Length: 418
View 1 (tube, helix red, strand yellow):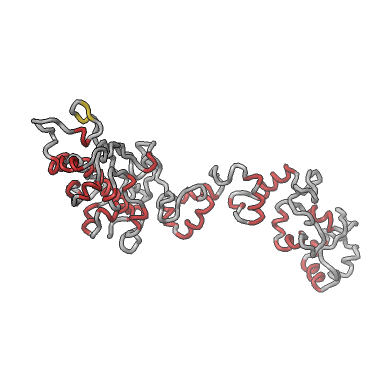
View 2: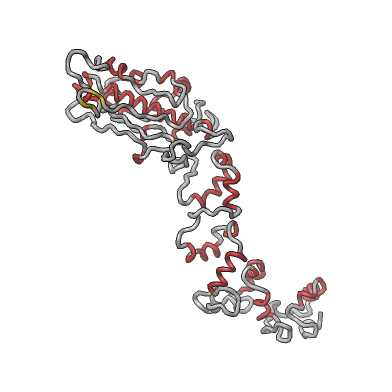
């Protein structure tokens, strides 16, 4: 098969539906078939709409006001083409491939127009009649697809390939039209093209038309859970789309331009559903575990620090939550001696920039500066034992002595040996 993935998918759906529904409406009029059917076996319902009774962006709502049983007709050895007489020459998804009244008359006798002699039997097949007249006709808007039935049939496909086994179906609905996964079984990029624009209508820029500009009530074309690409735009997609975008960037570009990504990733636009409504109380777990790249949207100084300072989690002297409080930003023992399991020294040595996002230099000096400097501290050495006078001490002092003077004064006995 070489027809487009979505085209084929949609075409198959349309062919099957046309075969199913069109054949239903007309073949059901057959007197012989109706006489062979026990009372009540032919369904009376006629409303045929899309999945969930709402239609879809691909298959609009339909109304087929007839009674029909595909399984009974196919069980008698009939073929789809006997009712859907034009399907073999159909090259567009907009072609109306439902059976006509005359095609039904071939089996059911002359009913269109109704017989000149004898009673009319419109109500046997039509569900909406009054005084011998049919009061409602077929309403089946064309699917939003590019599809060629003839091409698929010429390449060996049959109605069942796309529409499934209709021998078990009575009155068909849009649920019996093909889905994307069905199309992709052939449109895999090898047997047939697998680009989205092969089947779905595109604009002048080559991107898919996702919104009906005429009828805004039609659902927007968005990948669903039935998508074979794994790109279902559900509530988790905001967090999960990175892997799909990296693996198949062309898929995203079928509908979105670059500004759609940059508006969000540069912070211009923030989708309201990125975080749960109560995420503020739980965000610390994600921030500490690094399960999300917070800095993709947030700035440490303007967002994190500003909020933490207001709540008292900052380093200022007026903070309401002390280091031993259950509400402290750091765990208990964080300011413990170097070498302890929870010591902050390890985190500071690994990434001092993280500390600096909340703390100022004065935070460090309050402990590490000696008592005789301009901003006296507690004289707690961050260097470890035997550091003074060591080769590393002398090398660091020679490279930038000003750093040493942050905590020490020139007359400090700790640096006299430098």
